[in-house]
Amino acid sequence: MSNSNSETKGIWKVIGASSLGTLIEWYDFYIFGSLAVVIANQFFPKANPTAALLSTLATFAAGFIVRPFGALVFGRLGDLVGRKYTFLLTLVLMGGSTFAIGCIPNYESIGFMAPILVLVLRLIQGLALGGEYGGAATYVAEHSPAHKRGYFTSWIQTTATLGLFISLGVILLTRHMLDADPAKSIAKFNDWGWRIPFLISILLVIVSIYIRLKMAESPLYSKLKSEGKTSVNPLKESFGHKANLKMVLLALFGATMGQGVVWYTGQFYAQSFIENVCKVEFDQSRTILIWAILFATPFFVVFASLSDKIGRKWIMIIGMLLAVISYNYLFTNLYNIVDPKNKTEVVEKKEIKTTVTLIANTTDTLRKVATKTFYADGMSMVQTKTDTAYSTPGKTTKKPLIATAKTIGSNDYWKMVAIVFILILYVTMVYGPIAAFLVELFPTKIRYTSMSLPYHIGNGVFGGLTPFIATLLTTIYVDNKIVGLMYPIIIAVICMIIGAVYISNRIDPEVDR
Amino acid sequence: MNAVKKYAGIIWVILGPLAIHYLLQTAGSEIAKKPGIDTHIQWGVFIGVFYPIAIGFILFGLYALEGNYDHIPASSEELEEDYETKPL
Image (cartoon, each protein chain N blue to C red):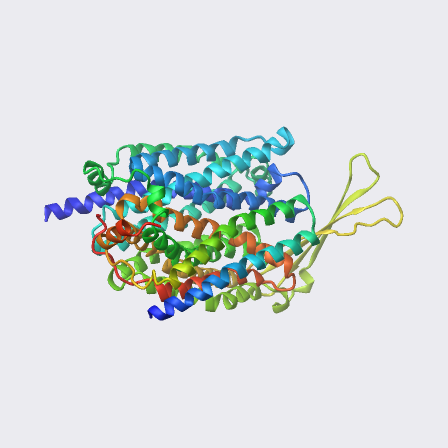
């Protein structure tokens, strides 16, 4: 009994140390994405807001695309020298680059060096993250008993969503605490306060490095090393042998590809859709996601534990299937909930405010007309039209800028939380069991390398590019608000079919070879 | 089931080049519509990233056609045996 108690205590120490660092790395990675628009204004030349947003999403995407390379570099290191020291390195790189992003002067100060530095640091973030997850999942799995591998690795699986949760929370708190006046606080946040979430990460990283320094090496890896059985060339052994390469391809096309698009559609794209397509204002679009994450996160552990009893495969496939058949319906509902066409306007409360300011060194004026419309169910919508009133007769602004922001009532708010909760439930089904699934596919001596690559291609490339590709699709097929879902649906369908046909449902009784 | 796995391999082998064709076609038309450095970079990144993945997909299809997925190793011991006897 005491042996079993100390083993359980031991595994919780392992999970705690691994998860904390992984959580911080996810937080570091996601604050960038959560602040995409603010960063666009700071580091990219002032231009069309859509172009700026796409440029930043591209930088965001750069961080995702480079993840598989990080997986190869650090996966190799982890199989050559051990999991523990590779972990430390990825944490130092991630923490350092995140802190540095918070320190870069903006475009107005240092010109084109600004976006270049941001891009380089973003690439380092992506490399570090590429090395982190495979190591953390491998490390926990190699400490876990076989019949509870899913359950114990599920705690690592919660860290990505919780990292997103914390990044959103820190950003919202910082945004509102810089001044007693909310409008001034937001203005200060957009000006310099956005740096705070990046800078505080260094404190979290220092704590995590301290904890990780006290961790022992994975027992399976230590055993392998003492027996002289570690790999001399894990990259060649991972991808130069058909027996292993076929499993890497199967892991990617039959599992992580679909899992990646479901993960990012249910969280990142859902938030982006609510903010940029439904036009719900900044704070609400994020707190909706925060509540949904809070309610759904326990299900990572639920579905991963279930996978220990009934196998991993069908839980993941059913998660993809539910996503594929319901995405159009759920996202259409998100849009319809806040569509003014479905609401009753309270006409007498309508407010119109016009501000005119002289444009420096010209005789033209900048005209802003803000129309605030109120609806019976508590929603209000502000449409701000900005154009230039030219002093030259006959000259007009060809394309006035129109910005829309809706503040939704309580009923609509909780309906949106419920829908996003369902989307994240699918995420927990596809993501909860996948760490254990991937660990069980590969032998110990090349596990870190082999599982990291399909994971980061599936999540970094297929998943990470989801918001970007979905937004791009809406610029090509402009009349369809939910055309962006074509991408995750097609990818998830192909993955689901391959997974159902080719993947076995067995749980490996021992991974200590 | 092994027959399904094998013949589905034909679908994956065909889907890979189809995906590349669609990607190149869309890239071409979008660049023609909005010629600019931004558009070139965006679509260059997509092609650079998805092209090797499509090649990997074709390889997956070929492996399926050859019957390499007829038996998936059921334990780490089997993985090791497979791995020792079947170089690329």
